[in-house]
Length: 463
Image (cartoon, rainbow, N blue to C red; front, top):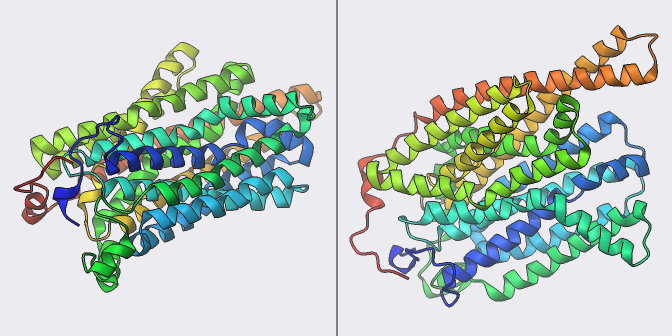
């Protein structure tokens, strides 16, 4: 694909530009996918009461929500290489809307768990968004474009803390019972995803030159065998798997915080549920600019030090992320903890942007496949972190029950909450240390002289 046809500027208001049109539509689609993916989180107290979920089933729902995405992201990258992002996103949005709508109709815990697993597939939207922006923007701006679209889309995972209750309030105003509002809200979110699929089909194209089908017909598209070879080369490239690990250490930890921070803040600092929820929302709102900063500095270091500069910045910001999380885990004063939580939020999202300022340069013949593998790493990280926190919490709570045998129910419950908070705190510390180790591993990513030359084209015109 010709570099000269790609946009060299992220001019957000140049809506006549096909890359900019694509940027806006893919960012909005990504936002809606994440909004729906985590849309049930604000309603969990109602869901637990309505369906009678046990604490174990609640933890399992968190784990299942990120498990399905692993398989979807691995698959969707290969499909993007073959069929193009336009058709892949259209089908993902329309098929992904089905479990989102269905979760509003569930009647049993098992049905709920199945739907949470299937909804996770919609998280593959990230890979398509990164693929689509990667082939629309030139090397000098691709890191910023990738990071901005990902950050604005990822914002949906936190914006639902405010958006879903507002939808529920609107539903209640039409006479629906408050205990049933969560069901209607999920149905509405799923319906919007379905409609977004139609928008993607009719108002985007695969590349600046046209759709994959047309390019293949005219002979301007690489043959399918080359795509397959590119995929196999990507699988065998050690750098891809290091970035898989890196993304597990940043995006995976952000997902983990989304799912556990509400309870942690309430149990550790005795905050009200609404206050804790608003703090997590503010954490998510940093996606408006934090990921963009990661991509921006990745591009800047790329100009100064070449591809090696991008890797160095990634390692530095990843180290900061690990240190911030480990320090936050031990904070006992709320103000101190809040400061380190904000620093962690900023650094973890910048690390995500920095990761995908490196991804497009690993193998440009298989960007979709590489994006899929690396993107799946984020969900593997979230899955493993959730398992770690669940196991530590379960052990701590059992010990608390044994230690408070014969005490009043309220005392036992308080002891369990304190034990769970302590377990999660130690889990955060372990994760922070592992993130720092991952940063050191990231430094082993190397690029050849040919790779460096390939990203400095002699003639790149502005699109």
